Amino acid sequence: MNTMSQSKPLHLHVPEPSGRPGRETDFSYLHTSPAGAVRRPPVDSTPADTSDLAYGLVRVLDDDGRAVGPWAMPIDKEILRKGLRAMLKTRAYDARMLIAQRQKKISFYMQCLGEEAIATAHALALQEGDMCFPTYRQQGLLLSRDDIPMVDMICQLMSNERDPLKGRQLPVMYSYKRAGFFTISGNLATQFIQAVGWAMASAIKNDTKIASAWIGDGATAEADFHTALTFAHVYRAPVILNVVNNQWAISTFQAIAGGEATTFAARGVGCGIASLRVDGNDFLAVYAASRWAAERARSNLGPTLIEWVTYRGGPHSTSDDPSRYRPADDWSHFPLGDPVTRLKQHLVSLGAWSDEEHVATQKEFEAEVGAALKEAERFGSLADGRMADAASMFEDVYKEMPEHLRRQREQMLRETP
Ligand SMILES: Cc1ncc(C[n+]2csc(CCOP(=O)(O)OP(=O)(O)O)c2C)c(N)n1
Ligand SMILES: [Mg+2]
Image (cartoon, rainbow, N blue to C red; front, top):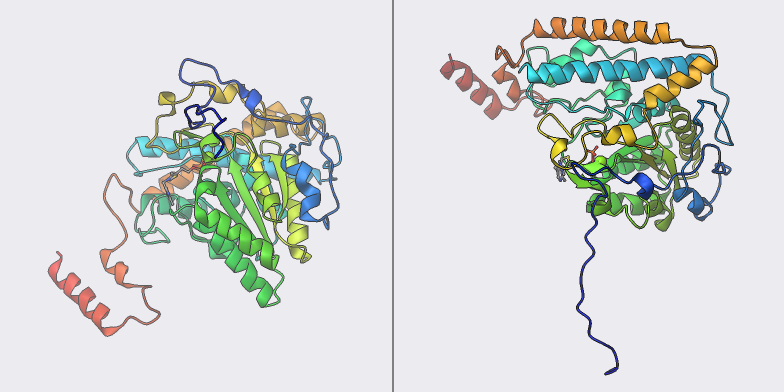
């Protein structure tokens, strides 16, 4: 036994955010790289050869809205315009649904304010038939498509007579198989193991489809996250592993989930997975990194983990009050800015957008969302209590309804007025 060592009392380190209500956040904790500074390795790089990228920050748009550096790829202006429209549509939808919740037309809502670039740009980088396993903050995957009627989505929020999910899911927990949008599970981190399993099945069937898994910074502390990484690495599953680091998990700062002395992207490298840490508020960087990861997956080069660095501009949900735990104006000081403003600036500098078109597009989507809400309300809302028929709960349990369920349904219909 070493009798020389001094016995100083031990203590634990409990991470704390630098900002609290009334005290401005010191965002120097967020290590950033200048736009264009981070290299773009070949897609067939080994996971270990991406180590530096797990600690840097892939960025394309500089402060003047120019696309610079090795990740600036040629992108059709029409795709960028489509992207900006998708972000504006998502923002308009979120803003109106927040009001609808306050008006007691829906019971609950979750916005993705400030994070719009991630899902909308990622959706444009995937192919038809690929499968996303989203969380509740990837509505942009749906709203960037033309084939998902907004009215349907609002009927889901209202659990009304035309809710495609018949009132069986919490509002915002959409499901659209045809849009590659797997049914959202409220049990966080399950998306990761399910996506890796789906990707492995795609490879076992010698298919060409890839999966895209979604998780937040906070949920990476769940065991499912780590299990998924092991399987993805071992079998080189064709999957993109998205970690959306929006700095907060309800009222818990990202450092509590382990983002203080390392990065979430670095988890991937440690597991033998190619990893990138990317500016999630930079539409061009999101698109380029998503394309890189998708190409790797589709070429049997294995999974990629991407940490998207962003900021949750709004409350966690309509049940949360962030002014209790962070400065009210925190978002306006976030070093990576607002994804809408940044893509707008870029498109204006290319001569492919204008202030007038911006305002007109905002108005166009406000009107579209307003009309969709009105149409959805025709089928009932929380306010009037018209909801999916209770007898429908016996449907879709088995492929063919067994005798005992048939009897229970008949009894219910007999006994309820
Ligand atoms: C397994 C599990 N644990 C806890 C919860 C409760 N919960 C819902 S959202 C949330 C915070 C998640 O934060 P994060 O993963 O950072 O995602 P974000 O909301 O920021 O997008 C928690 C703890 C849950 N839904 N599932
Ligand atoms: Mg979070």
